[in-house]
Image (cartoon, rainbow, N blue to C red; front, side, top):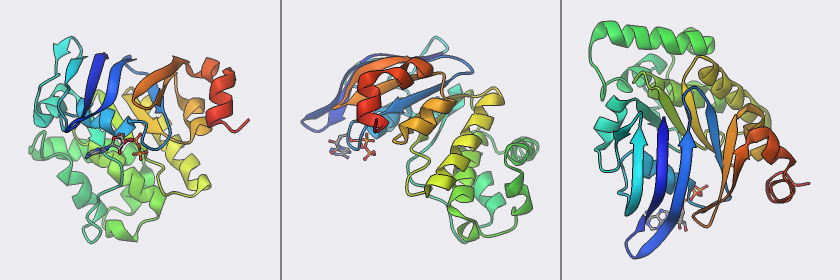
Length: 235
Ligand code: ATP
């Protein structure tokens, strides 16, 4: 479904990603592990069309998206919830969600369908739909950020460190929410620093280090991998 092939990119004179090859299959949850600065956000910005690839290609369902605009990429079925939640704190939960639909469709019926889809996945947001987003807990705000991306009705949801700044218990709650999204049939590409929790919900994983893929494979296998255990699981 999403095929990233030999991708290199960076900022100004600096190459950050080197020859990245990653596949995110339909319906699967693919996780990208890596320390701070390993290039996860740079990779996701490139997938979402916010940063240009220098070499290599990105295709989605066979369509060439390497140089497509961000809006065309959303229409092709890839929606991203960027790192940091970027909610409008004083606007209601519902209004924040509705804003997520605007790049894709403004049709009232489809917006209603989108809201129903999000509320079915995250019932707590239905209860709080009229509350200001800023009054929700950190985990709930992250659900709003994920929900906003889901309003575009994506086939692939790209999530950049949804657990950032959250307490461990809340991180587990967010990972559970991500799992539910995936179980509803949406493929997920997830960047995460909490390797243990991420590998538990993922089908496959890639480890990035200094802009390169240094490990990859089935999530269960990587959980047993000595290097991964030493570097990311603290064992
Ligand atoms: P984090 O977990 O901190 O978000 P990351 O794995 O997502 O880390 P990136 O944010 O992709 O890593 O950063 C990869 C490298 O690119 C780092 O060395 C960083 O300093 C550099 N970098 C990121 N953004 C820019 C930018 N706008 N201009 C120049 N260099 C950048």
